[in-house]
Image (cartoon, rainbow, N blue to C red; front, top):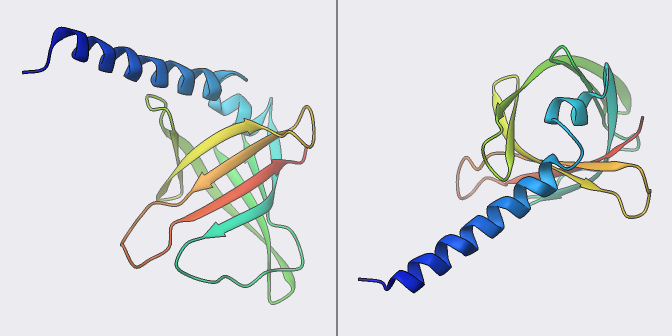
Length: 146
């Protein structure tokens, strides 16, 4: 059996990580306000990290616009044509260090962080769910554009 000192140390360490994670995430306000502002906010994809696969690059940036009412519009190029599509989003969980957001039927982990290169702007990181060990986990990093 572990000593009370070991258990107390482990709990203190867990509490420290949890509080620092919540502080980083909720520093700017509610997740809805961060994603959509007072009515809507656009986020431009600036970096995608894929694991286990290569993805073709596009000449135009991908833009996600989150609306406070749960709508999401995406602008992306397909065969060099700009395609706009409508989707739905909602918070799936606020109770973890990494918050969860559901876009249509897919749940992503997301994080918000300050952008060091553009003071006053934020970055949004969406991580796709892990479906299989052989399929890639995808991180998409967006820069607040409005």
